[in-house]
Amino acid sequence: MINNRQEILFIYDVSDANPNGDPLDENKPRIDEETGINIVTDVRLKRTIRDYLYFYKGFSGEGDKDIFVREVAAEKKGLKDGKARAKDFSNSKDEVLKRAIDIRLFGGVIPLDKDSITFTGPVQFNMGRSLNKVTVNHIKGTGAFASQEGKDNKTFREEYILPYSLIAFHGIINENAAKETNLTDEDIELLNEAIWQGTKNLITRSKMGHMPRFLIRVIYKQGQNFFIGDLHKKVRISSDLTDEKIRGISDFKLDISELLAAFKKQSDKIEKIIYTVDDGLKLLDNEKPVGIDEISGVKVEKVIY
Image (cartoon, rainbow, N blue to C red):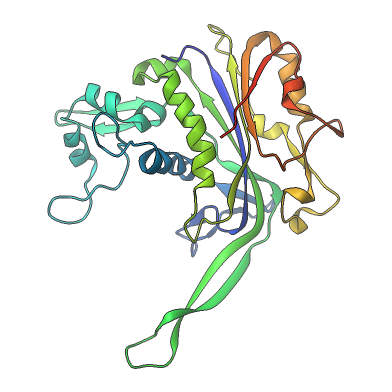
């Protein structure tokens, strides 16, 4: 069982793609109009995690491994609703928690026969926000088929993409809520892998161009109910280019000096730091190249996927 409060910072980038379209606005990328910052919902990240666990890690409903929130065909037609999914788990709370890793991670409302049960998710993410201001490109093209049978004119397609967006997510793992969903250390290791590898495996046409760049998980000492908070606000882009002209990680360095300062200040409360970093991403501390391993007084482990 999870016994330590933990904190996550995840940074990935998107090139010539739409990281999270708004279905109520022509599926355009979500933009904070006041600041020009790209927004990605936590639901999008959770879907990335669920899809990776389902397609790559065997949580496909066979045996004791499943994903509760996924599309499952109904017997007659269409998709199963929440009540029908609960029946797949024998309308049993214990069975849901035993088999469904996404409920152990993110919680959810389970509509059982007699009553609905709400699990508060131990793992929660804020809205992802880009570290750079972005521009939106509107692209038009022709489709493969005629507009009507027998016509020569082809259909038209249009889409909205971002030339470049560097997106940061901040998450908390609450050890108290973990006791309610039976969240384990093994679940968190799979979460870590799914965040990184799931993003890397977003290879559909609309999501091609996603790459994980930096993932760090801070494990705090037991019994403190403490976390630093706002890790995504303690990193920034350092570049000679304006935000809108950045097109990749070779155009900037990631300044993590404020993040490192926070770790050093609270080192007596930190048990361990686990991180993964893309080899091409350059990290800075007070304008000097730095490695995460150089944090003194804290056990640091680098994971390579």
